[in-house]
Image 1 (spheres, rainbow, N blue to C red):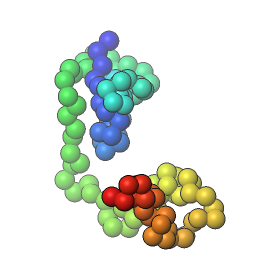
Image 2 (image 1 turned 90 degrees about the vertical axis):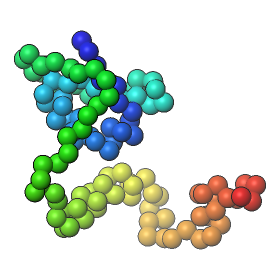
Image 3 (image 1 turned 45 degrees about the vertical axis):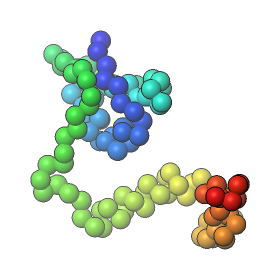
Image 4 (image 1 turned 180 degrees about the horizontal axis):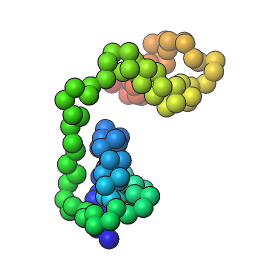
Length: 113
């Protein structure tokens, strides 16, 4: 069986296209720093499907299929709720960091960069 290797960062940016590829029978090996860490594969192999070698080629969205502003906003809120806000301690939600906290987060507190 042939596999296509894709870095996780690239896969995040093109996840929907990779899923479409899986629907067509393509198996993708996800890598972190060049090491395989996960596999995205079809549930059932597509009959007669061939897996291409080489870098992944991503299909662009078909014309006229772009999301409207409301749909983009709703999608962003869902992403924030599932991936960002769930990781912030409850007592910190809605609180802006002060200057010292920002410098710690950015790494400026060590060495005075």
